[in-house]
Amino acid sequence: LVAGSFTATAQTFPSRPITMVVPFAPGGPTDIVARIAAERMSQTLGQQVVVENVAGAAGTTGAARVARAAPDGYTILMGPMSTMSFSPALYPRLAFNPLTDFEPVGIVASAPIMLVANKNLPGKTLADFAAHLKANTASINNGNAGVGSTSHLSCALLNARMGVTPTLVPYRGTGPALQDVVAGQIGYLCDQVTSLMGQVQAGAVQPLAVLAPTRSPVLPNVPTATEAGMAGVDMVVWNAIFAPKGTPAEIVTALNQAIAKAIDDPSARDRFLQLGAEAPAAAQRSPQALGQIHAADVAKWGDVIRAANIKVE
Ligand code: MLT
Image 1 (cartoon, protein in one colour):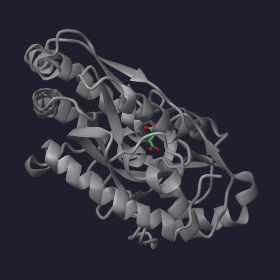
Image 2 (cartoon, helix red, strand yellow):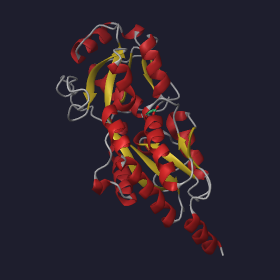
Image 3 (tube, protein in one colour):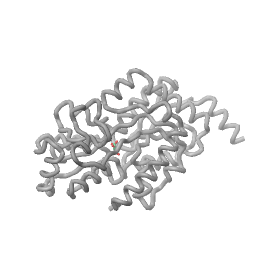
Image 4 (cartoon, helix red, strand yellow):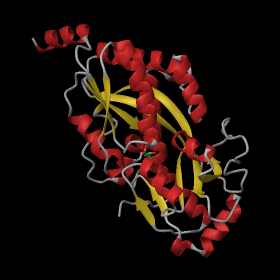
């Protein structure tokens, strides 16, 4: 009876609005990618995909909510690489297991991390900025989206490389952290280029380095960290949809197809291009590909976190 009712449910899916949980505040990269996808997935699915921001504890509060939701496709997660891959190595009492409590659905976009600083801070190159930071660490704060976010881990690796231990200021997402970099309460931030482009183009923050193997096509004049003399701190971040474990395969397929249509939509492609984000290549679009990439990243970043001895304080 239970199996029969699941099949019937899968055939009529979706028959009501879907909630897409974003585990960070509005205005950050996870939120931006979610809203681009949700709007277009709504058109394909014929039901509203409503973005709900459930921020806290570097995304783990929102992810835990989805892990416990009914496995019916009506509550899904926009899961960033950070929350889904860093948290097991950082949180000893994590309320969910990112690898076993979810069905992978599909990657929506990936983007490199970039370091941006308040525009009044001296140091036009990464080396000059590092020297200024070393001499003024006590007065320059580093914002992030909580211990275990990409903004935290990427800047933690960079801070170690620069030899500085600034005060880390956690936010509910990098959207509000970026506003404080613009305003000057926060000196610098490492975040996906996706949410930084607007303020960089407005001249409101200074971009210092892209933490990726290659320069970003939208910011060809910004060097990579390796070019700027600080190798070993690269981080390219995916944002992907996950559903609660046990969600029927037909529903996972319907959601995966809606993601594919959304990211192939020319207006979404243009938006991603402008923001420096990239839709996944054909071979990386399936739920299985996400499952493999996710498992590899849990292992890879777990090793990085343990080697760097980064802990939740
Ligand atoms: C992160 O730092 O992991 C995310 O960029 C946070 C966010 O999307 O706001």
